[in-house]
Image 1: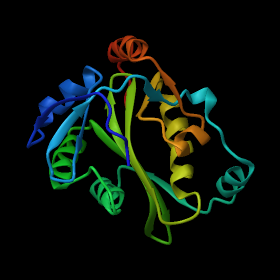
Image 2 (image 1 turned 90 degrees about the vertical axis):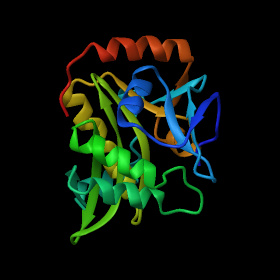
Image 3 (image 1 turned 45 degrees about the horizontal axis):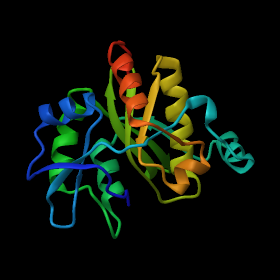
Image 4 (image 1 turned 180 degrees about the vertical axis):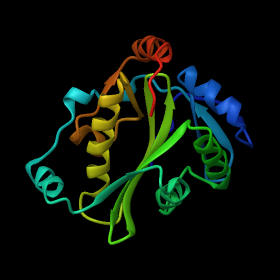
Length: 200
């Protein structure tokens, strides 16, 4: 679970317009165990520089074997529910409702790994300008979420995205090449990314 840092004001609901306004300012929401929604702007901020993405030999082998079929945006809500299906989660029904709405507005997207028509891995996030704000990922099969991440990075690179936000740096993300930058630098890069017109 993401560790709370730099907590801001709380609210009980997620207005889609407020969510997008917050992301544009480098702020994102998380729900606590009681369902209260808190807003965060961590310092330092975790990002994934695409040229730092680490793809292990075994992961490369999995990708070459084409073990999974990768799809975009074919099961967004299902991906969110799979991400929420764990002992500790910040993704409640309010999140699923709001982000699914943002998906219908082409602002929230998913990358999915399918195996024999079964969803076995995926991730989702928000896009604004040339920025992708990664939210969560899940995996029910070996390397499924990692394959999705590689596919996401390739997709973002071809579309010209310049900022890949991962919010907090976990050991898992660090093993894949994630790093941290000061919040001031993040906000500067975010402001530049927001001036771009990248299309998912």
